[in-house]
Length: 37
Image 1 (cartoon, rainbow, N blue to C red):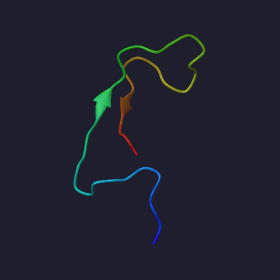
Image 2 (image 1 turned 180 degrees about the vertical axis):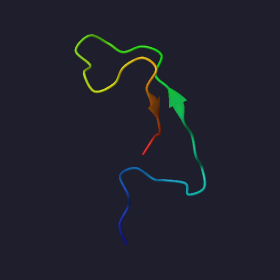
Image 3 (image 1 turned 90 degrees about the horizontal axis):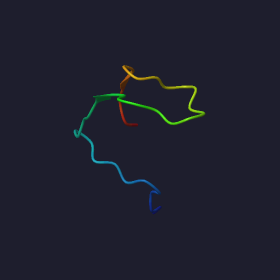
Image 4 (image 1 turned 45 degrees about the horizontal axis):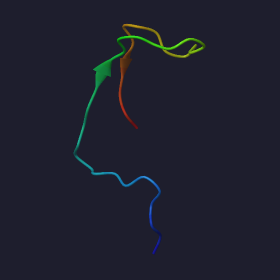
């Protein structure tokens, strides 16, 4: 078998809203809704 680099737990869900971003971040903005993948 293979050992996954990032183990995942199916059925565990999360979401959030970006509060702030650092200098140079262009693909996210405060207020964006996000989901971990």
